[in-house]
Image (tube, rainbow, N blue to C red; front, side, top):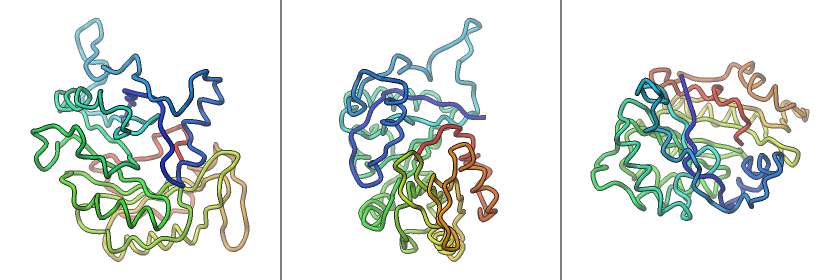
Length: 257
């Protein structure tokens, strides 16, 4: 089972992958009067500690909690709240918290003093979108003390070589195209090449979604949002996924990239 916890909302665009950020698209869709670049603390900030009338936790034990899906857990504007968020994560050892970040270079800002080699219940995905960002972020990611690491290539904007960053500390590599009206083209050959790199290093690989504009065998397909995940699944190119960690990206129903 899975659930979501968004302790804060809003994010500041950082790199080419942020150009058509889904947070900005969703805020515009729902007519938000607050700028998407304004990071603000959410009303359900303390959701991991909230209880029902019978005193049991609202977030049931054993779930994977997708964290900060409408922001970035490491965004600088949330530094004042992160220590408290870490404290809740530590307290709820019966949950597994999973967040993606484009700010892996800020990982050690407000990191708990007892972090050590990493909390067992935290999974961190380092997001990259092109070769330049991979070459900057992934060496930093590999050097950090994190027990459970994934690489998220989303939105994938060009052919990339990440083979030198793949080692047995990486639990999975997931790839996705870009969604939304302004989506940039994603090439199926890029996905296959990342898959090849993963197989050569025996790293699990997941083709999560096609994106809205998908190039395959020289033909450009325009794929509606509702079919982007299912079409990726039909390609049947996933490799040796880590089901023991329930790293099942299709449970994220909304279009994230």
